[in-house]
Image 1 (cartoon, rainbow, N blue to C red):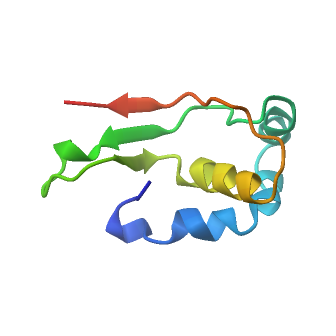
Image 2 (image 1 turned 120 degrees about the vertical axis):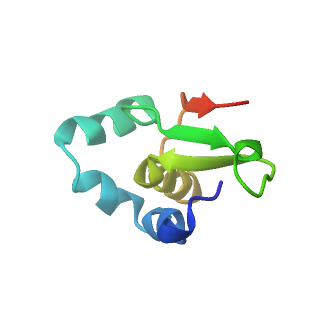
Length: 91
């Protein structure tokens, strides 16, 4: 799931240290990840068909750190919920 050019690489950067990025957030964020295996607030995504040039898939508008933490937790085999909520803008 890509992000805009100005934030290229941020999601993967966060995914390399998901525990760190959760610890620097308010305590309730960490508790939510530990107990529920997902983010406290859903990220905002957009269908890439709405962009110019149009493409397939979704793009992160807000929530790059959350998406990175999710990827990192999956990679490190930490508790991750089977489903996650997200706000998605579609045509």
